[in-house]
View 1 (cartoon, rainbow, N blue to C red):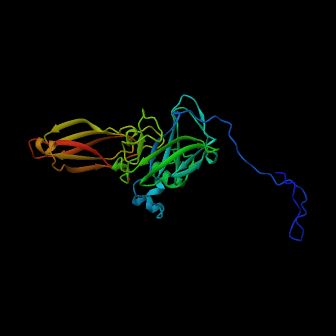
View 2 (tube, helix red, strand yellow; view 1 turned 60 degrees about the horizontal axis):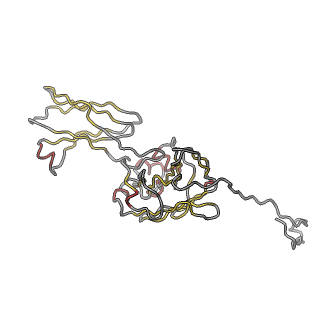
View 3 (cartoon, helix red, strand yellow; view 1 turned 90 degrees about the vertical axis):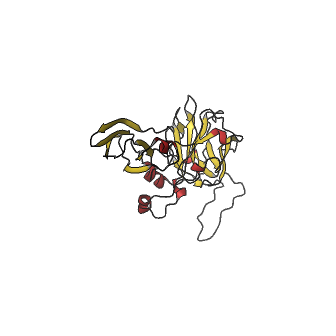
Length: 288
């Protein structure tokens, strides 16, 4: 920068600089065109996660539920998008110039999080995170906006905590519906709770299905065969009459199968049920 009225300072503590030019100043500008409407969307918002589990607190006792927040962006187009000229504003603030990546390939997702260390602890380090945002997502709801470096709004929306109680501190995230057009008018109808506890960061949110692959009745009892996807915990429950099964009676738990990093083939043995009939079901357990 040239300053025509610059005067050199004098004195023993000032260097003998007489140039009217300042030192180098660095600014970054993006010439990439911003995404068109519908090409870039907020695909998942986890604004009020579960409190830290005991194992997470053992790693860092200062963790709070807000440390596990995240926002996911999806390239909903068929071309690569250059996001270097964009920023996220509203409840949180993030510039893609500060991220570890700026080019989002078709169908891929970018994760920005509040606390990368907490996120990796809960979800694993294999999910790529491009950066941490400033601020925190309000548990009561608020605005999120994508804008250019010059402040031009590309996409703006709002979320509210009373849309779905399960997303407000009960472990489930807000997931955008595929056919919803995102804008300020988008309300509850454009969103749904995640199928699984803790959401599905970095991937499409798909329903986890578990079922009995076989039920064998032997003289000594009943053998229940189960196929479990990885990272899925289930509780095996039973009840003894059809009327109870169809009503509001309490199902009895007799085994909880812990999650594993690999898919599991399990056999559960119900020894000598002692009744003429018994009904079984599987209940997916919330994650830690």
